[in-house]
Image 1 (cartoon, rainbow, N blue to C red):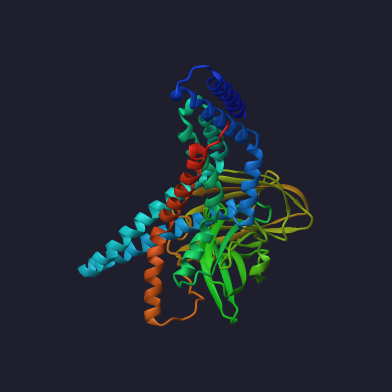
Image 2 (tube, rainbow, N blue to C red):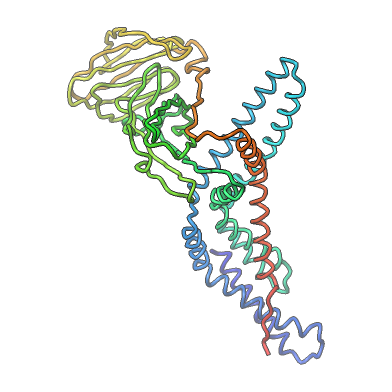
Length: 454
């Protein structure tokens, strides 16, 4: 705000200089015409400074009125970029396979597709990073723009006007990008009805899972059920679904076990969903894993019945938890075969654990050990030794059948062609629109209007 004060002081200086030049008894036309210009410039800057908070509030109001939301936009862009990267990897793998078979024509065609997808991914990343910059720096850019506009004799007025306009227009328009893409696809005759899901998976104590997998059971409106496996990154998972999903189950898939969560046969409209447009819905929810106390890279601790967690200390070699159990509890320790269980201590006393059973987690094998914990407050320490580098399965299939309706081959080819074209140019086209609108507003603020003083 100090820069705003400085801009206001410069506007007062500009007004004084304009009044002096306007009233000076020297009949030089080239000098006298600067009087009205400087006075008009000072009035414009003083208005922008005085109504800075009002203008920002009005921009937020317009954004909410149009249905834009920054957090939704960031989630949409994250999912969009990851989808593009996945598409590039998939097409590249198919291209390499055909190359090994010696099918040169298909290899060249797929190479062209990879090139276009890579270019579109670069543009999407530019839009994404520019959006993050605007989200956290738009206020500073607007203030700097006003400050440049306040410098007397229009030394940096055009630069300041463009900086101010670009920050303001970008702040309002960037969150509307998903709606722009949806509208563009609809005009192209493409169905874009989509449900974007951003989920957070945690233990029952609320600690996010940094790795592992989740299993989604998708229940369609036609009573069909599909199963989807997704990796977890930093406690979150992302997926886009067709609109004919009725309800969803979320389970954590860790060390060969599926752990139920609070999201079980939950209707889609109960997942904190928000309609971004008539065809795009964004849902965010948090899934608490029942009975799961801790998970990290092939080591799972779960309790039944569960205890209250007081505190926990962890390292690659041990886990120490302080628990408050209201009744006798059984602790389950599940490890992949590349992790050895060295010892277990309860209240600083070594206890004997029993091997209950062994299991397979895709291509990994492991076993589960158990011990009992009495009622009361206890400290539990598990000491382990990691002997390998692979602690989670690497060959998990994450494919799922679509719930989309069937199409004839011609319609499918037309839809795919239009989708690819719009998918490639969408981010660039939207950036051009933002810069064009900002340039128009900058010309208006930078001297496109004239005030007659006399």
